[in-house]
Every structure is written in C-alpha cells, then in structure tokens.
Length: 482
Image 1: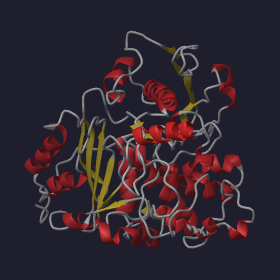
Image 2: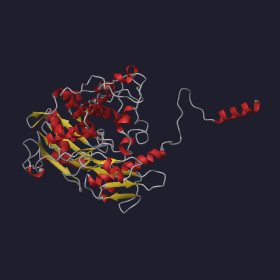
Image 3: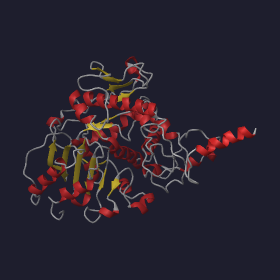
Image 4: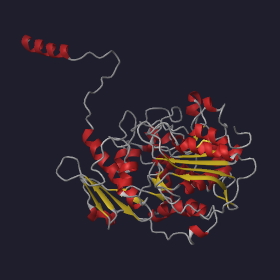
C-alpha cells in the first residue's frame, strides 16, 4: 500500500503547477474535428453564394471571397469539391477522409443554405424557399431610390468635388493590402453624390453583409414593436434549453427584448475564447445545426442588462421571438419583404435561413451597395419613406441610445447599431451611427449632415478598416465638415 501511495505522489509531483485560483489551459485543440467541419461548410456557403447569389466566377470567389481562408480546399482549377451548376449547389470534401462532406444549395428568395453533414443533394427539396413574386417593374427604368435610374447632374453647391474624390481614394487606395474596398457610396438628402466600384463589381453585385444584418434584424423588430406585437421591456418568454423544472424558477425569464438588442442578456457567451468556429454559432452558420437551439441553450451567468458581450445569439433570440409571434411559417418568411425590403426598393436583398427555415439575421444576408444605401436613407429620413412612416422616431431613438452596459466603456453600442465612441466625438459628429459587419461592411448615417455613407469590403487578415476615419474624410467635402 505504501508503494502505491508513493506512485500516486510521484505522478502528482510531475504535473505542471497551476497558480492558486487560476484555471489550467489546454494545450490541445479538442475541437479540431468540428473546426474542420465548420471550415468546409463555410467554404461551401461562400462558394455557393459567390457563384449563384453574387454571380461571380469561380476564380473571383477563390481570389476574394475565400482570400481570408488560411488554406481553402482546392483551387479554381479543381480539388476536393464538387459544383453542381444545374442544381446550383456546392459540396466541399471527399467521403471517407475524416471530415464530413459539407454541402450548400441555393434556394429561391433565400440564397444558399448549409445542409447537415448527413444530408446530400438529394435532400435539397426539403430546404426552405421564399417564393414571393418579385416587385413589379424593371428597376433599371424606375427612378432612384425606388429603382436604379439615376440622372447625371452636377454636385450641389458647396460640395467640394476634390475633397470627395480624395475621400474615395482614401477608401480604395489602402496602405494595408488586407483592406479591400469593393464599393463606396455617398448619399445626401437621398441624392447619390458619389458611387464607385472596384474592378469585377458593379451596382448589381450582391455580397454578404455579415453583421450588418443585425441592424436589418433590429429594424424588423422595430416594426413589430411599433405595431404593438412586441415590447422592449417585456420578458422574451422563450422555451429556454435545457428546460428548467419549472419555468417560474428559470432565471432566464427576466431577459427582455431590450437586453438582447443591447447585447446585454447575461447569458453564457458561446462565441468567446475562439469557440465561435468550434462549438458556437458557427455550427448554425456553417454546419447545418439549428441556429435557434444554439441560441436558446445557454445558462444565465450575469444579471441581465449589466454586462455588454457581443454575441450572434442575442440577435437570433430576438428574431426567434418575432417568428413565434408571427406564427405562420410563410408569414414569417415573407415578413421582411412585405414590411421593409419591397417598400424601400431593396430588390437585390436576400435574407437567408438555416435548413429549418429560421432567418440567420445575425449575418447571413446578401445584398448590394445601393440596397444598403436605401436602408441607411430610411434612418437618415427619420423612418419615413415615400411619404409613409416605416419605423417610428422612438425606435430610431432607441437604436441610437447607448446600451447602459457600455456606459463605462465608451458608449459605443445601441440597439444593434454602433455609435461614435466617446473618444472619437471630437473629430466625428457625435450623432453619427453605423451598422458594422465582418470584412468591412458599413452603413454610416450622419443626421447632422443628412448623409449616408456605404462602404463594402472583402477585407481579410487583421482587417481594421476604420469607419469613423472614413466618415471624417468624407465630411471634408461638405461645408462645416472638415
């Protein structure tokens, strides 16, 4: 027995010491197989949308959409992927090599949907579609902003053309090769003053909004609040997972719509610590898991409203509540077009879903620069469009009000919109606010100058394009703005 205890003691002595109160760190990535599956699924979605939603060539997709991949599967000349052009679908991977083959398929009115690892192209007919007829008329013959017919006319008096071009050059001619501007628009009082595209892109090219989608989601939620179907300060009342023994004792029952829109629910974060592409929302984005289940299956670790933590699932919870209230699946799928997109002439915007028909409105939206300019104009015009109110001034005030949980950190975030942080209010108008998406997707609204600025990017690597610097440069072209 003494020898046995001595053996245990010897083992304990060779284990590396951990400081008191400090959690040990793993040296092995236990989630590598899931990361590989998600990486394959992400490539499948980006290839599928790149070719069949954006109408880009395979070479363009590899050169730009996949530029931030450290090691994409294959090359434009071929590799371990399959493109079914007739069915508009993509598979990445080869059976029997460990990582599941991941497939994405284009669906009418939605864009590409990621399939589960155990699904094949034969299961495509089970994926959701949104079959509403397109809006009437030809956008090319309808005047801006409801259409794309824009007359050529000189700049308004007082606008400095040289400074405006300099701001455009600042956006496109980046010192960092990781920042790739693909489009820039400057709109004042609804009039397009500047519009520019990188080679290979034009006004019809749809690209992914990434988290700019969150601001679109917030607008749809605002319409629900304005019409009395949702309330900012009522508990969400969702069926949280895992289910508590009694809903009345579940602390998550205190979480409100305001909390999640402020990124302050207090729920356990699933996308932190490098786990977004392992066990977090990436499973829904890129691997065919239910985006809703991932959002619901989180414990409460902080008092709601007290701590800001940027999580894709916060947006998804609000959208899930919207679906519950709308009830009918078809009504839910058609709701964005009926109340927002078609009213603004956003004909090129596709809101994608997971395979269960839930909108992934935290990221998965494809659109073009002009549609995002229209979206920004709605806010610049105080919620009015074509003489009708689309969203209330009260909702705009909410999205522009700093989340209480950011008070000690710069007041930089509102209701799914980003605000000018305190440290930038000396060189950027403090009333400006913005959407923001990965790889440099920005819609910036500057009410004091009646301006909307849209910058689309395919940034990669460390990225770092500064939307407030862009705002500063553009404002040099306007009286009192430089």
